[in-house]
Image (cartoon, rainbow, N blue to C red; front, top):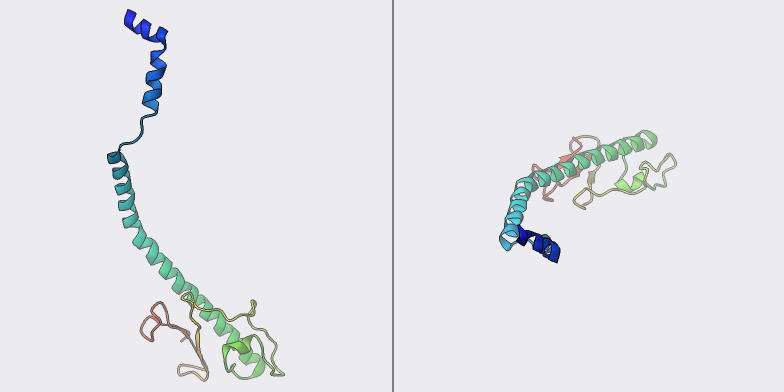
Length: 145
């Protein structure tokens, strides 16, 4: 008991507390935490990437609908479809009452490519499509028909 009192009297106990408080993590502890974080990330990352790609496709569908509505408004005013999408913003036609797009720019699809527009279309009055994520004419295209 006297030894314990002596330690307190000499002030050695606060020195021991400071040494315990300054103790850091071992390399093994850090590696285990990094491995757990990597495992969690490997399980979650594919779901996030899949949702990101799906949101790009949904955005493309919405933009195609917007462009289709603008082309139809142009058709109702002028009596013909525009020769290209730029005519939705600027035209010299006397019946033109545009611009038909609020931002006055033709948007690109989420993969930074221009939308494909064809008038007269093969599937209707006009065809409007995006080549989708792989940029090829295949089953991944997003279209207005």
